[in-house]
Image 1 (cartoon, rainbow, N blue to C red):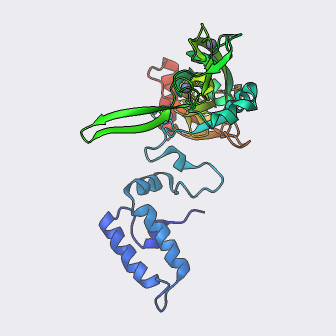
Image 2 (cartoon, rainbow, N blue to C red):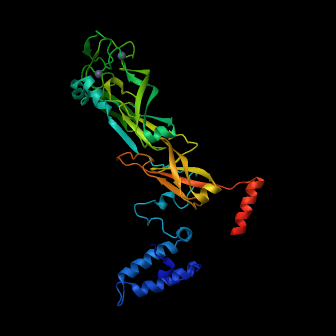
Image 3 (tube, protein in one colour):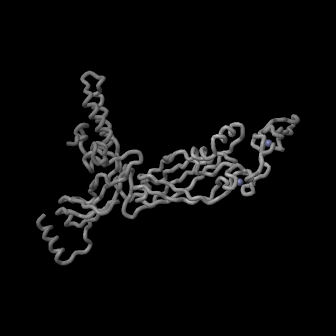
Length: 368
Ligand SMILES: [Zn+2]
Ligand SMILES: [Zn+2]
């Protein structure tokens, strides 16, 4: 049985917020556990009551439903609906936080392709990482719930297929860099008002290696990269939500001359569904029943994301009542659990009645 918070505070149901506050303060003094004659259990109960009745929104909901929303342990959690109350077709119900999913480090695979020689060389030279790419991908509601695989096409910097990223024309010889005479470093002279400042920098032509190729690759002009269209498969996990981002390591722009690739960030946009809405891991939907079905009870068809199901409407169901279809919601990203589908029943009131219907309703009215 639910506790009567008004009784706990010792006030009447229509009491003003000021009176409730006053009553709470008085009783809190009386029951405070630090005081002589205090009662911890009663003090806790008092606080629980005041947290609901002292809050205009919670009090309104308590008055309407006779219970607090975070109290029905394990069952239907009203607080999921937020303070605005239940409205499955409310816009903006999507969670907006960005969660990044990492689908393994594809950069590691590239490291293997280039061989281990590259990484030891890379220490002595300046390696430029390729740029990250950000894009949006629109998927439909069901795809977001159950997961899918998509192929995206990107025009981006990729490894030159002619020189395999080395920047050397196939068959060309390795020669000493003429810019730095093989030292890998060049002197830079800056003129300032205090005179000339001499500094050393990594040779821009050989990136500090001191060696270069006798002939630059004709396709990439020695950069090791070219622009090309690539198709990339993207695994979209079940339960992904609007605004969340998938990260594919190493699928961004390729770095020049063997530099590591950037990452690809795909921001997911989920299209609205005409029938279903999502709220966290729950799916919200509505079904319409007629007056007779509401009064007498009925077994009616209710659509779920996986097809038709049946919902047993008990006799005397009011409009706005919510039924739970357990496990018919959205799978959780990092666990095996799944949310529920919450079906709101709307009772249709007939706008026009036949003569016979009218007679029957009038008869009903007489009986009441
Ligand atoms: Zn090339
Ligand atoms: Zn050089």
